[in-house]
Image 1 (cartoon, one colour):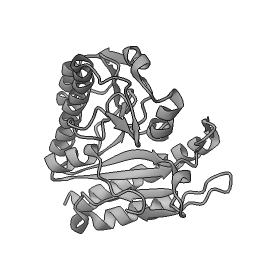
Image 2 (cartoon, helix red, strand yellow; image 1 turned 30 degrees about the horizontal axis):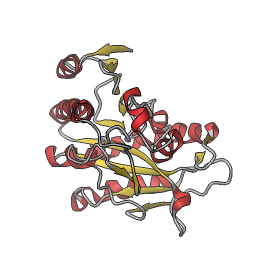
Image 3 (cartoon, one colour; image 1 turned 90 degrees about the vertical axis):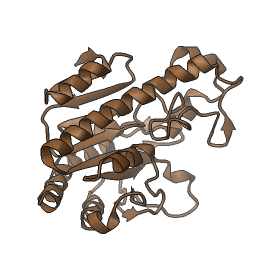
Image 4 (cartoon, helix red, strand yellow; image 1 turned 180 degrees about the vertical axis):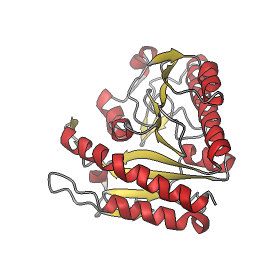
Length: 276
């Protein structure tokens, strides 16, 4: 892996170079092993929280971890194109608009002891902006090369906070073209429902049950690229103990192994259907 400027990362993409890189400011990673018709994203995987913010933050390290999506990058790491955030969403949220990316409150609790100085807020928003410059260059290249593209937007959610039964997998589709891409969406939901988990974890899969796919990552790509489907794919945090902050590596490994075959199979079917 190299440490590269955003300009160099975009140059590599435009020249169709294969590379593994971390952004110069360590805010995100990207790897491209091969230029294919699909990409994977894990925008909430990051946990870094820069030190100058520590003393001013009212949320604990555990509070932040609880609302992040740990291990989502590992679940998709085997695939040819992966882009993932390194910073905590509590610094800036890549899945929200620039206007809302730096929180004042988070999940009903004030985030900062005193309001953030503008210089600190700007530093965070600059990271948000450069990430999306790379996303734009990447999807533009894939659409240019293949005509169509599918993006697997990996997230997780805290299932134990719900007071009803919720699915192991949720697909959020309210902001994509369901008339055009409906069969592909349903095929992905069906494939996820067939995954067999350890620990007697059920494998239910629903659409717009817990979340509707309102994230900025999905909306940005959908609004700028008319031939790309973004599949906001949420796994319930059955792969960890939400309250004791314990990861279950055998469950993470199961998801990664299942997606290693299911995801490219689905992507190939998508391409065969929509590239015509």
